[in-house]
Image (cartoon, rainbow, N blue to C red):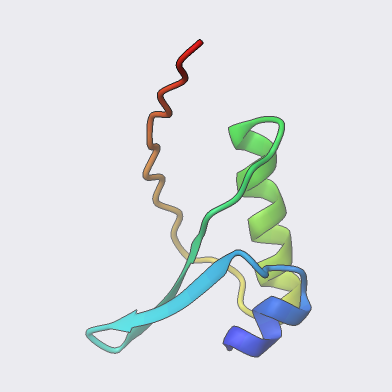
Amino acid sequence: MANAIYEAGGDDATVCSRDGAAFAVFTREASSMDEAISSALRQLVTAGYPASQVEIDQLESLVSG
């Protein structure tokens, strides 16, 4: 699974499993959250693993000027 996602362009994905369920965690930069999510979903489909659930963990960035 990890190799297929990587080959589909998901080089920022970490593939894990818990309680018998596999999942991929993406850490990516994009112009918008919508673009980040939709590109990750496209890569999962291309790899042959369409998502059945999406969870968003939004981290806040601190920028000092």
